[in-house]
Length: 144
Image (cartoon, rainbow, N blue to C red; front, side, top):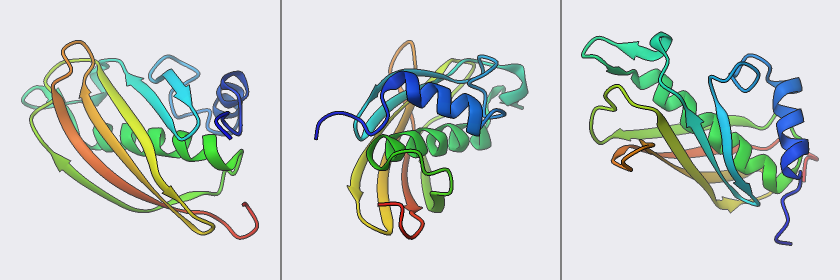
């Protein structure tokens, strides 16, 4: 079972339809890489995400990690919109600065009720790590 539960085109259609305000419809987010249990999501620099400093804000970074984790999870369990974040732990490693960001996420364990994901955010151009997240998702009954 190396193929994702949704192929890339189906995943992109699902994201645009089920999560229209996330940013995939207007270029605020982009699915750069996608496979079963893993993905890479890009967050292009956008003035709406900049905090004083200036730097990409923590909430924007956490949102990037959470969306990437949801995509990586759905690549394993299929189109389950109500799989929800149960816990998100983040360690900010350095300021993101004014840079496009990339989040590489992978499923560490996907069970019947819970899934644990690892998301690593970096500056897209240079690869400097910005944040590290572990994210637990609750999977609704009957979804698996």
